[in-house]
Every structure is written in C-alpha cells, then in structure tokens.
Length: 207
Ligand SMILES: N[C@@H](CCC(=O)N[C@@H](CS)C(=O)NCC(=O)O)C(=O)O
Image 1 (cartoon, rainbow, N blue to C red):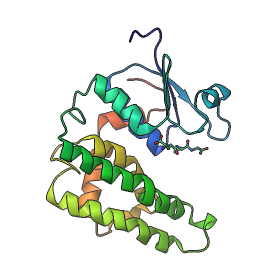
Image 2 (image 1 turned 135 degrees about the vertical axis):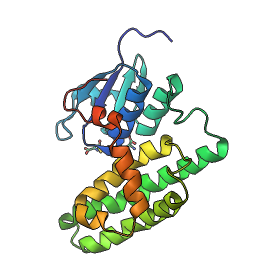
Image 3 (image 1 turned 90 degrees about the vertical axis):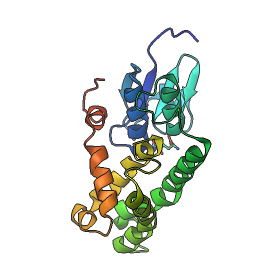
Image 4 (image 1 turned 45 degrees about the vertical axis):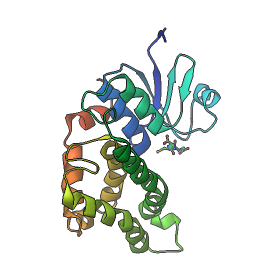
C-alpha cells in the first residue's frame, strides 16, 4: 500500500494502552503525527473514525486501528528491530496473548478500583490491591525464573503489560517497593529505564 500521508495517532500521554502502542510505533521508527486527546473532550474527527471513543486510534490511509494491541502489531510487522514480536514461536505468542488478556481484563479491573478506591466504597483500598496482587504473584513467579515475561529478553508481552504495572506501583510506591514482588520491581525498573520509554512519555513528541 502506498502512503499518501503520515499516519495519525490519537493518543493520551498517560494512558497505558496508548503507551504500549507508542512504544511499538516509536520502536519501529514509523513517523506518525501524534494528536494528544483530552479524554473529556474527544475530537469529533476521532469519534467519526472510531465510535468506541477510546485511545489509541491509528489512522493510516483508509485503515483505522482502534485497539492498542493491533496498533502494536501494525507497527512491529513493519519493523521489529528488537525482536519483540516477529520471531515469537506459536507457543510464545499464545502465552503472551494469555498474559495480556489477563492483564487487560481482571488486573485492569482491580487496578481501576485500587487507583480510585474512594469512588468504589464497597471495599477498601487494601482489598482492591490484594485482588490485583493475584496477577502480580503470577508475574513474580515467572520473573523469578527469567528476566522478562516470555524470554530472557524483552518481548511484546513486557511492553504491553508494564504500563499497567507502572500505574499499580504508583498508587502507593512505598508499599510496592517493599512488597513481596522483588522480581516484578526489578523488571518494572528495567522497562522504566528504557530510553524509548522516556521518549514516548515526552510532553512534546519526538522519535
Ligand atoms: N481495548 C482498548 C482500550 C483503550 C482504552 O480503554 N483507553 C482509555 C484510556 S487509558 C480510554 O480511551 N477511555 C475512554 C475514556 O476515558 O473516555 C485498547 O486496547 O486500545
């Protein structure tokens, strides 16, 4: 497909879904025009392209991609310089997708309640945290065995999941750092240290 113009990426800086998408797009080195969206006042043009009203949304010619994992795949299929995706075996890929699915469903559910426990007074903050810990325990067990979730090197699943663990860690940093998840802490620190992460979090865009 020929490209008439630079793809457009609707994004929100702190959104974990948008972060995972930007990580993949930036890693692939694909230039995009980045549009930072105010979630309370989404651009009409974006809503017309995707009625879901969520970010990220990537527009490439006639194609509209409005799921973050699909944006990652779109980018990494074009260029995958760090082998995050292209050479995963089928078993590695299905393991990745299962972990990401658990992250995006159960863990995200409890993360939102832990972050905003005051808006969910039926349970305490500690209760929501302990529900989220089910996933942390699983990650800890994996990361006690190897440096990253699927291999000893970083892959797709690490990039897709860490922005959510980052949010969880930020609710109560002190608790997280002294928790019984040292391997998760080390893993998260190594991802947060990536220059690429710094770049996708810049207030003003630059590859
Ligand atoms: N399944 C979607 C979820 C994206 C999503 O929920 N993004 C949030 C921001 S982090 C959003 O746009 N929410 C709509 C809103 O807050 O109005 C994806 O993976 O792209």
